[in-house]
Image 1: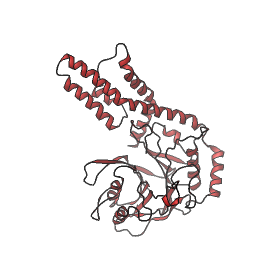
Image 2: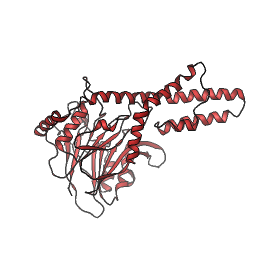
Image 3: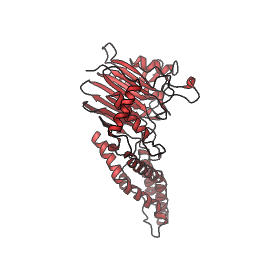
Image 4: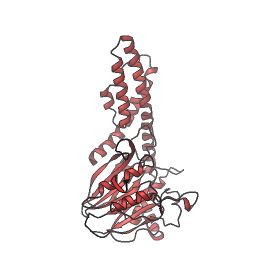
Length: 396
């Protein structure tokens, strides 16, 4: 699966100019003097590499309607061709704009990459950070998460400020596994996301061409020398409590740390639709589904962490909190993780860390957890609008 993900990224990067040219030509064809008359066929549609499933369905539906109407007479057939072609152009226009956005982001990042902190300058910043900041302290397997709301953000001077701060944080706190939430890195080569001492294990980009910003996305770094394999990486459809209507699309990367025999599950749960049902579905005090339910009986230590977008500060969403407790999960984060501009009384705790040992195994393998910066610090100085969450696991 990982090879396929990397290949897909390379396809996007190497062929995106061709895709934009194809779609621009397609859009401008009606203005040409002698435009081609045929709409896109299913074979043409299949050759479009990376629109989301909804775009594919709409394009094929338009072609199917054209075939249905084309069976009447020549006049109707010609009209149906024109209508189908224009409908397909309208469907593809947001996709073409998204391709432009992806290419522009990659070009901007290519220039900014030359200005990233590197070498001695990076090491100096790491030493200052280690001296001045108080983060994870215990010895063990360190796991962290931070919603960065676009890793590619550049400051007014074109410097990748968030990326540089991430490099410093990883170097200072020496995480073994670190998850970047809402990375928003669609169309950017993974090689440009490299951080000294770490490998980009996998990435999961939002794949909605109609949404140029592509909210969401996960990026996972693992420290060099750690043996791992990727169990799953993908978008997970979530249905309502009746198992019928689509309500959400949870993003999930599941990594197995081989030597420690522990599963690290990175999650982005979008703040719309059935985001509570996607994690733990509770009916009549019985948990009947959701992600936590699926990992309940895993015969390994498991840590699930990420931006869950369910506030559990104090008694908020108490039914949901009862649900994960019923399943035997321990939630480690107690302080708010998203400061609110109107004051601390409006802060929320929406970034969580859940842990569970296999059934029948007692004790907690999480020996340290917390929020960074500490509660008294209200923000990260423009670094992110969430706080970092972390835990340390018993080492092997």
